[in-house]
Amino acid sequence: MALTARPHDLLRFSGAAALDGTPPGWVPASVAACPWGVVRRALHPPGLVPVGIRGAERWQRHAALVPHDAVTRSVPPEELRGRRPWLPLLAVTLSAVTLLLTAELEADAGWGPIGAVGFELATGKPVTHLGSDLDLLIRTPLRLERAMATRLAAIFSALPGRVDCQLETPGGGVGLVEWARTGGPVMARTDHGPRLVDDPWAPA
Image 1 (tube, rainbow, N blue to C red):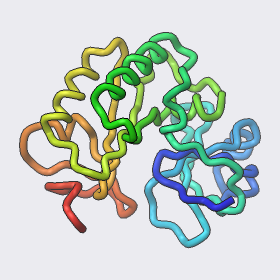
Image 2: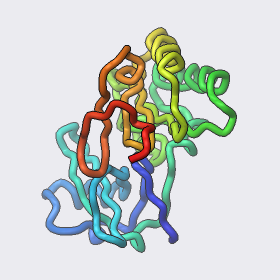
Image 3: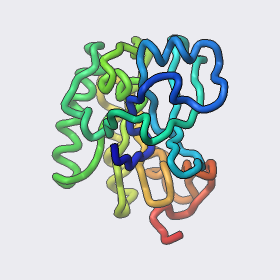
């Protein structure tokens, strides 16, 4: 398949044989049961995509590279926002977020659940628990003014469940709450690692 993978997209691939190198012992069984990974930020050779593999335990996380031709399906966060997690609190929170962002953002704005909730909704495998946050991604190719970020952060904080929102900017991934604060640089997650930037929308 022609693949344009972006951070936080969920990828289904052909199995453990597609992974590079020698992964930890838990990885083959985990991939056999659920052959999915989440696209991560990392430098990578042409024809390979960096993914994170989840295991059954919270400490079981593995960074891998998967060939493009091993990927059989790609699911972006935007495709998941109409689905609901299996835990009621997370489902109610995502429903409230949907109403909020439909009212606050432009109709074509890209956003969706990521993290454990996104993985669960894409794969059908329950991985959330009572302590899980609702992780969100909002794609912001154009500047999200701090006043709007502050407004969204305040509304999110009043929802039934905890919401952790990341903005996808031209300069990398930036936390909504961090951007909403007054003044100072913010931490942007990039393919080269985290870096402090004054304006994640400024031309590189």
